[in-house]
Length: 137
Image 1 (cartoon, rainbow, N blue to C red):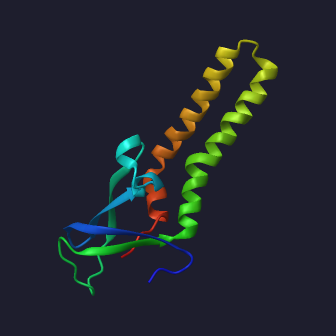
Image 2 (image 1 turned 180 degrees about the horizontal axis):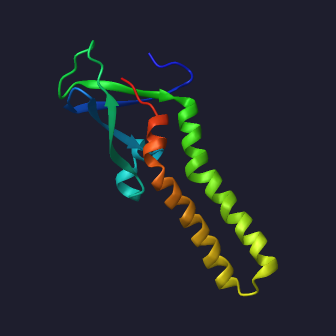
């Protein structure tokens, strides 16, 4: 049973090894549940693969349907890292460069490059960040 402060997705185990259990989950938008999804073509369903630490005391086998859980705070942290902070970087760069740089295209290019550098730093720190995001079955 999911607690109020958890994010839960159903998934199917596709691989089990001593360190990690690989679980495939289906992420769907609200449109994918709509009865008219075939008519509008807007439905989005996507398969994602998540590696969860293997629990040696709870044996699982390939094909088992499980609930993959994470804390709600992890979801909020991911939203901040991937959306809110880059938007703030973009807005700060655009507003501060509007005083210094006259050319709008150059201003926009520099601001977009700044956001690209932010995502590059996040990519460099992916191992450290992945240690902070914990999933469990």
